[in-house]
Amino acid sequence: MSGYKHIETSIARYIAGRYRSVLEIGSGHNTHAAELIQRAGVSVTCSDLTIPAGILLVPFMILDVCAVNENITDVECIIAIRPIEEMMGPLIRFASRCDADLLVYHLGFEGYSHPHRIIDCGVPLSLYVTRQS
Image (cartoon, rainbow, N blue to C red; front, side, top):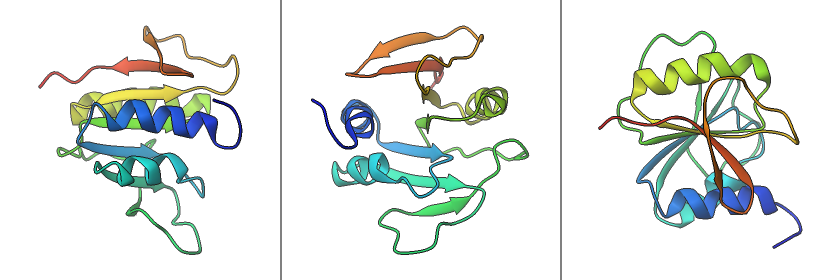
């Protein structure tokens, strides 16, 4: 599979077959993966520092993962597609507090030194946190 939105499509296919509730962090205007996940019947919410202008096809919330202190208890998986490195520590802590899997797609050869498992779903996904329940 190649072409437009190949990364988002591969991630969505992997997630849609494994989870019932998903939170995408830092999605900005690119809600393509979330839209595909939602079409597959999975509950999904996108988040970022601001709500993008225009028509949104998925639920969206304002969330600063670097400053959030509360937990979200009804999510099985948290995803981040191309997050900046400074978000990684807060993402790992947040996913752990929420008891949710954390799946991250890194840009190119970027990564993070925290131990993780690589999942090949057509693109390399990094699993940094595994939910306990």
